[in-house]
Image 1 (tube, rainbow, N blue to C red):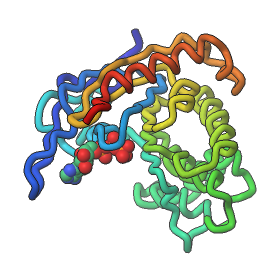
Image 2 (image 1 turned 60 degrees about the vertical axis):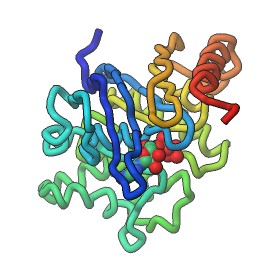
Image 3 (image 1 turned 180 degrees about the horizontal axis):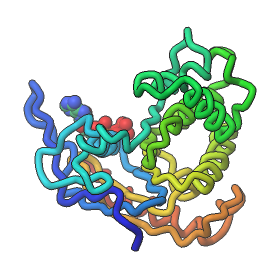
Length: 260
Ligand SMILES: Nc1ncnc2c1ncn2[C@@H]1O[C@H](COP(=O)(O)OP(=O)(O)OP(=O)(O)O)[C@@H](O)[C@H]1O
């Protein structure tokens, strides 16, 4: 078993709202090893984003414990342990792609020459070499998301948190980005946490799939993928792939009260 990068133990989170308490996460226990690619799938509102935000120390659990790189999430955040990629690319329209990627490096006070080097390296990693001087609006949606991933990679955090990064893109673009993301993951060895609503996307990308139930968000199944690390897109037509997809679907169904 690899070293544990993220360890959640009986995690609970209740939001206090004007309409009363909202139980977002309930009894979530999960162990994520170094270099794993873990997808979170479940119905809307089941707490997937909330879990990622707990890892990022943007929310604080109300029960249980959570460590990130062996530290509290707050300490891990201080240590810049993660990069975060959101559903919308969130690039500043008045900055070029290179200067968008540079922003966190500027804030962190990296020397100028190193900023340039890092920007060039991550642009190449996401196949955007030559696009550094473009503005976000000059790029397609898929390219903007790749730029957003480059920005999250620029300061070399070893954890990548991705919240439905490809959710707004059409299927062909999404397929292509999935392939590229897998290659990127293989090259960098990052530990990835990835939220998605798509069963094929979760199965294609992951070493581990976490299936969650509607609120209060609980884990209904954790599937360790038997698929090889090398995954051409047509692996999605193999019986092994379809079997895992079936198990994810069953997990989602088991967590759902359809007769409500
Ligand atoms: N700051 C907050 N205050 C109160 N309730 C919140 C807050 N953040 C999230 N929630 C509630 O917690 C629950 C879980 O939300 P979360 O965004 O984690 O779900 P999700 O699984 O990511 O959903 P989706 O798939 O729609 O993005 C939801 O019912 C949401 O309304």
